[in-house]
Amino acid sequence: MYSLGKKNRRKNFYRLSNFIVLVLISSLLLSCSQSIEQDNEVLITTSHTLAAPTSTPVSIPKLMIGKEVPKDIAEYVISALEGQVQLTEDEETASLFIRAGTQNPVANWIYALAVPFPTVMDGISEQKLRAIWTGKVYDDLSGTLLKMDEETLRVFTAIWGKPAENSILIDNEISDTEYEVDFDQQALYLIPFGDIKPQWKILKINEQSPIQKEFDPFSYPLTVSFNIQSFSGEEDDANFPIQSSSIFTNRDSSKLTDIMLTGVTALVRGTALVMEQKGVLYPGEDIRSQTRAVDFMHVNNEVPFTIDCPYPELNSKKGLVFCSDTRYYDLLEDIGTDIIEVSGDHFSDYGVEGAFYTLNLYDQKKTPYYGGGRNAEGARQPLLLEHNGNKIAMLGCNGKNNKYYAPADENTPGAILCDFDWLESDIAQLKSEGYVVIVTFQHVEYYSYEAQPILVEDFGHAAAAGADIVSGSQSHQAHGFAFQNGAFIHYGLGNLFFDQYKYCAGSVCDYGFMDRHIIYEGRHINTEIIPIRFIDMARPRLMTLEEKEVFLDIIFNASNWAIEDYSLEKK
Image (spheres, rainbow, N blue to C red):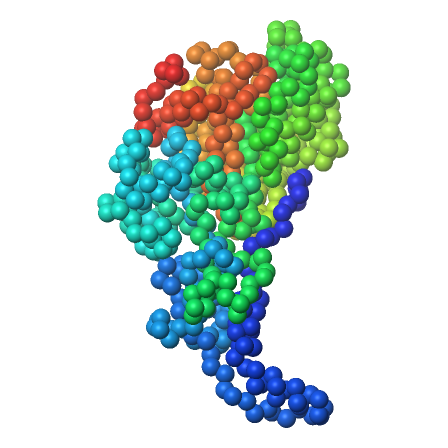
């Protein structure tokens, strides 16, 4: 099992601590029991045998919980103060209140602004969001409503004021419903962080999103703080000092893990030629900030490394027999590669010797691999990862079932062919052990945006077996998405590094994806899709907003999630 920690992890800033609230109450009780302290002082100075002091009975503070306080926060505070406060609903008799308040909070509750997954826009400003709340209309958001449950409505009414009539829709089933992707596209859904699911797309607000790694809750407009106030209503009342940074929250950064899946990497032919001319690290220069930032970066490297790989050329006499110079591994290191998939068609192009050399190189670099191996038994083994309390298992196989691709057998290295009896058994076992299961396929390459029937069948088979994420590593043209049996499916991501720039009809192979999957508290909660576009035979870059809008419309339509009928030539 690998526990990869290539980046320094921030310590848990928000770990639940009952100690804070107990200190708060203790300070109140101390201020109410001066006579007890005086009696104890006398006893301590006059005798080693302590008699029970006589004292004035101490009244237990009465605590009122504001109507806007979420149930989980109320339950947390009640549990922490059990026996130390008396609950009341009478504001006149209460001496303590839990309310929305920013100073010395005991809880920070993070909310997300969600839309259906097949949505092109990435974010909204706080100004526009607040405008929708107050009923102001913007042309680009005409007719847009805010949907939320009643608890969330109470929270934001407390901090933003009463919303405008006809601007809010109440849906108390948001957290319970397994949404399909065709739910209300005229609404923005305001949900607690804990209700995020893969079928949502989470919008940025002022460029901040709670699914981001570098998320700052204190500058995020949808962070709501709650504190304990005294009867005077003063948040900073001297009787209630809260001096610890431990705050109860529904988003704990120490419980979050992200993993990026990518498509075809083949450092050969035109890609290798550009690397020789412009530098080995050249292909990754425009995307490395994204690939380095994740906890686990996956690369599907289809080609073996060799020490005697010939100088690359576009039209090699060896045809589709590929190898990569060992120096090219520096590119994989430069983009932060943590995991290598070896289920590709060309893994055995340089025979047993080349396959063993490549696996030895990965072992030397301490880079784990899966989907292939030194023999069939090893190739079937899942790659097991643990990080921030999350357990992730990765399984991969070659779905072409073609002996031409030199699959691994009992004594021979290679890619492992897909066997659904094995996959079903392993997926079920891994799920029972608490793993988030990711299955990646090296499958038949189709030049269409729509997923072809054999892909739909095999990917659906893995989803039905219990996989959480099913991803196609094989395609040179990006394919669409699906949600099935609770699993996120991407039938093909397109190329990451391969020389098909301007090669395919309509330049469709110039476009691809990197998929960033977010795991929290042992479950897959969301996926951020990152579209890329090639600028030459070696180097992808992030798409512009205009390019992204057109491309995502095409992909969502290919997924039968109709948005608009765009083509790449339209813009």
